[in-house]
Length: 224
Image 1 (cartoon, one colour):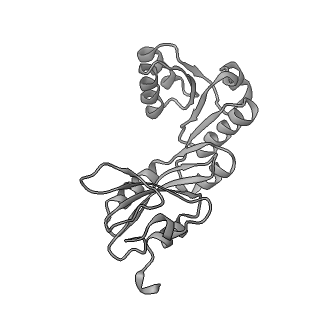
Image 2 (cartoon, one colour):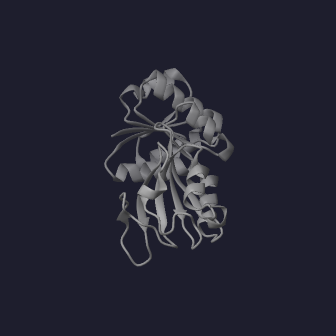
Image 3 (cartoon, helix red, strand yellow):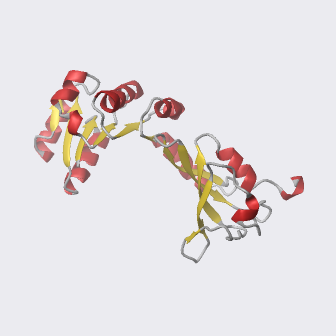
């Protein structure tokens, strides 16, 4: 694949190094001459000094033939603009943007960026995952399809315990994919799958509606 990366800092450098080792064609766009020189010394002539937010620069980089476009600078505005130009001007099929401020993720998704990566968000998810009181963990947001992949852990009083998928009557747009039980391989969930306490469920929900799924699966038996 031909992959263009906007941003030649440490993240861009190590990402490029990995992609090259996997056999991909990589071009990096970086404003800073010192950062570009680092690529030249270590990885060859894959870094071009230029602004990834400028149409002329992206045209010279051959963006119209890129399979994936990744913007990972330290500036959210630049990452958003670069991805929008790549997607809507050059018709790149997949755009990925680094989001430095997690509050901006919704904006990126609404404005057409296919996938977002928030380092702060990933750290927060890791914290959530290790807090036993937190039953819901966001695994992935896919802006193009408007869905999120979520992990929900059941406890002994969760509404879904002892019930099957058929009994739960999931709303349209929601799907339960896998159940993970300690000491067992993940199992594909079917209509007759009945849930147990401590099950970890991998589910799909429309973006922004994860709380509806949480209420359906966790809830509280005393409120039934």
